[in-house]
Structure formats: structure tokens, C-alpha cells
Image 1 (tube, rainbow, N blue to C red):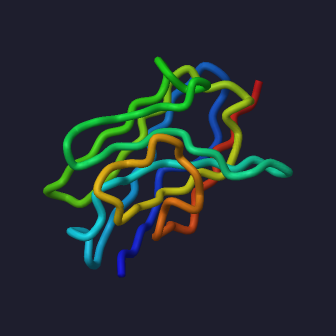
Image 2 (image 1 turned 30 degrees about the vertical axis):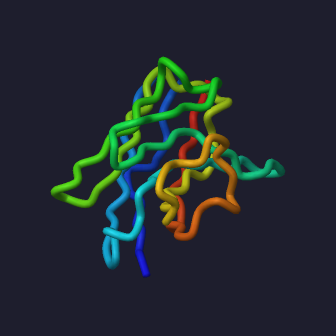
Image 3 (image 1 turned 90 degrees about the horizontal axis):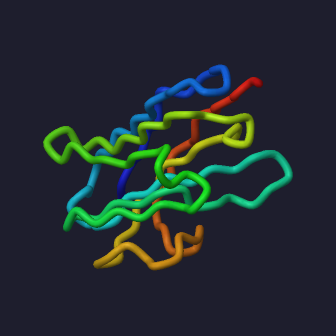
Length: 125
């Protein structure tokens, strides 16, 4: 089992920045892919970014150039640096981990085995 705990959420004005953290514990060696998802009210949970143990990263088109995913393997912590935030980024952000060898090409909920409780990001205009 893997436990994931997100932190760093909050409220920010449009154009601002935030950094999310996800602390992983437990059998982290069994997970090769880490990702961030988000879910706005009334919407499905969508993949935002992923990172695998080989250093490969992917991003949703909506966040490319603004968000950066990174990992500190020594601390078993995943980060999401979010810049140039807009109200459209308002959502609850979730950290997820998958046991798959590589990150899936398409980030879908079904491909991930472990989830954090989420942290709320609210961007005001």
C-alpha cells in the first residue's frame, strides 16, 4: 500500500503561483508513475501532469508552459509548481500513483492505484 498526502493548496489571484506537494509513504518502490489530477465541481477528474522514474514528464495541453511537475526521490515527494494561474485552474487537485512500469499515455483515473485526499485551489479574477 501507498499513502499520499497533498499540501500547498489555497486561494490566489489570477496570475499568481502556488506549489503543491505530495508526500508518499509505504511501498513507494512499487509505484513507477506519479501524477497530478484535478476536479472542478460538475466536471470529471482530469489528468494534469505525470512523471515516471525515468524522468519523463507529460502535461495536459491546458497547463503546458505554466505548470511543472517534479519529484524529490530522497524525500518521496512529488511537486506541482503552478504559475500564471487563471480562474479556470480552480479545482481540487489530487496526487496519484500507479504501479505500471511507465506512465500511461493518457492519464485516466482507472490507470492509477493510489490517491491522496486532494487539496483545493481557488483562483480569483
